[in-house]
Amino acid sequence: MSDEHKPDDTSATGARNFIEEIIDEDLKTGRFSHPIVTRFPPEPNGYLHIGHAKSICLNFGIAQKYGGRCHLRFDDTNPTKEGIEFVEAIKNDVRWLGFDWGEHEYYASDYFEQLYEWAIQLIKAGKAYVCDLSYEQMREYRGTPTTPGKNSPYRERSVEENLDLFRRMRAGEFPDGSRTLRAKIDMAHPNFNMRDPVMYRILHAKHHRTGDAWCIYPTYDFAHGQSDSIEKITHSICTLEFENHRPLYDWFLDALGIHHPRQIEFARLNLNYTVMSKRRLTELVEGNYVDGWDDPRLPTIAGLRRRGYPPEAIRHFCERIGVAKFDGVIEMALLEFCVREFLNKHAPRVMGILRPLRLVIDNYPEGQVEELEAINNPEDESMGTRLLPFSRVLYIEQTDFQIDPPPKYFRLAPGREVRLRYGYYVTCTDFVRDERTGEVTEIHCRYDPATRGGMSPDGRKVKGTIHWVSANHALPAEVRLYDYLFSKADPDDVEEGKDYKSNLNPNSLVRLTNCFVEPSLAGTPPGSRFQFERLGYFCTDPDSTPERLVFNRTVSLVDTWAKIEKKLQAGQR
Ligand code: ATP
Ligand code: MG
Image (cartoon, rainbow, N blue to C red; front, side, top):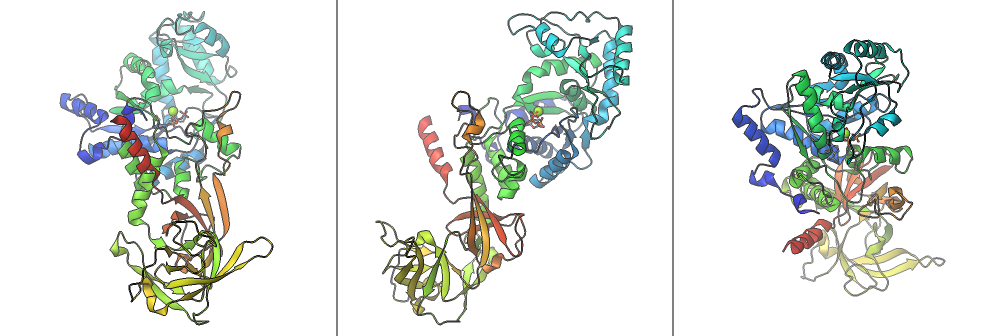
């Protein structure tokens, strides 16, 4: 983590980040007279991910802070890769994150006619021309970072000829790729983006909104700044890769003489142990490396939601990392920390058994059932209590019993006494083994009726407390345990000739199909979040049915961030 990426929690201190400082300055000097207007401009060619969440929180957050508004604009200029499925998913995700764009939903495609007219205006001003070079030729003419490019032989076409050709491009007279409209700027400009960039390309493709109305489409570079201008955006906040597009956007806006937003760049959010490029996410989904866009291992918003990440925790994470001016990589452990912190306060505690082991209490009356009171959340008394059925046969975790316990193992072992959470003290008297495999299949205990509620009247201490469910009352469940999608912090750290996919973690999903949970979880709707005591936070999956519950592990209880933070602090001293 670079210095610029230290979590800078400006929210807590009320300090301004650099973007807010710029806006404050603009307000002071009166550069913009209307309210602050920002926008979140996704291209509907994939699902949103946690990096987009960062941009969403930033743009909507600034609008909220300054009493302005934030637009949701679909930058839909590339019909071959975009679609309505993505538009709907994006809207759903932004709403789920807790933001509302009200009536301000826009599409770059709604501006196609205006953009076309502006292109005509630039042609008439001698600032744009139709070029017949192929894409390969254009690349050759473009030059290199150290050598200037060459002018296109079509650069000096007359305004009349350009107008005629451009109109015929629109009319569909020419095949894909045969001509482009280019801005006439400077083929020797040190910034590549200024070397006569393409404004329009021919593409006979159906658009998800405009249908067959167009067979020429504006490039992102020609559409983006003008879309901002049309919407009277005051602050166009984007990621660093657009910094060297800014002179081009400025050039277009100045040449057209229209409203000029201020563009501010910030560093993209990168997280370790995952990938965030849309191209890669698409590859993982389409290549079935994961199970759809909402696979809980993906950093997509849909995946995080399915995994059980609360929107509040995602928003808090985005605030906590702040905005930076230089690229860096944030620890996934910090995101998990934010999730844990939120769930600790808000998620009800329940008991679930992932790998069941039968425990029979030999001296507990057969057929008897008691209702024991359990606390729903020790962090929040207002969440109340519930009753847990207790009976003669229970399930406990296999890992809570050992025949030959190592030192410092305080759970069950032959002759050992432990506390059953909210229940009784039990002492292990015997165990049964599968003759073939040697596996322990059942343990036998005696309970002390005087220890109801987990307290001993004679002050006798036990070192271990374990969780359990009543075998007759527990509900069968499947539990999916997730780990990082990649085994390496940097998925690009690969051997020669291999790509990031060679670092996919083969153990990123473990399905446990023989689990049991307490009966209070019957019918919990997808998205319900719980702490399974001692095991972690879990969330009901959409695959869950009344007959068969399915849970995803959201995060474990182990705080890895605390360790990393300590190391970072030590490093800074
Ligand atoms: P593409 O490669 O398809 O352009 P993209 O990730 O940039 O992918 P967009 O739909 O163009 O996707 O992004 C919408 C907005 O989200 C842009 O303003 C972009 O700057 C911002 N954004 C995208 N990725 C991140 C990220 N990792 N961190 C912060 N903001 C991001
Ligand atoms: Mg982009």
